[in-house]
Image: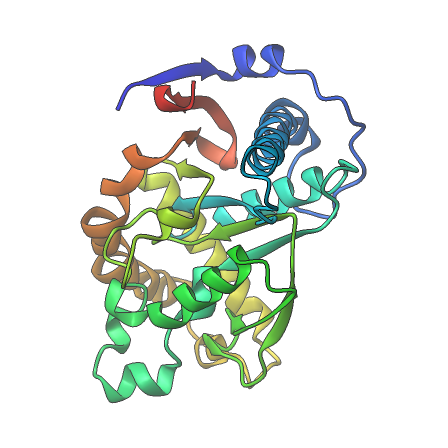
Length: 294
């Protein structure tokens, strides 16, 4: 696929948002919100309105209410690329438009099989690979959401316990739904590709060395948080010396995350409608727009 590329300075000049930014309680520089995410939210807002207008036109033509399904935005990329942060920032910005105040985020991590099942199947070391997901449940959930069900029960995944929590939560019918995860653009996702449900797909891209650095920073943060929390999966690593913890992180990264990246994640990048190309410190320095979106 061919992409149109906008350098950071070009991107921030092309789009002017029509809303004022409210304070975002997220660990992201205001500069990044203003220069990258607010213009992107404006573009997405335009596409949401376009879908609603098309639905109204179809209803008029068919003389039948075609219903309302959420505008679904997929966000893919490597482990530690910043997918969930991207989803949270865009969700916060899009919720400020009065046309679609109800937004929600669904992570494909919520549809990982519980650890007890992964252990029973001998694939705990393959967590994050296609076979570790309950795709039947994920597809059923997406079908309910796209058919307009008002309240849908979804599992909850905890990065602290590294497992699915016992109690699910209720996802109420959103105007805009973000589906984020490493496998959002993959084709081996059960009965159909997840992309069948998406209105637009974003891929968060970065160099391998930056991805590992961010992964290492995440591991350190999780271990630090778990120091006094025996319920956390990462509590078991609290007494490791820094060098030993780094060695463990490198081993997991190379044997699991890097392998998964090259086998299943990176090959999906060209399927995205928008690629956010990051450099150091998670700063986006180029935005690539797929020509099929134009």
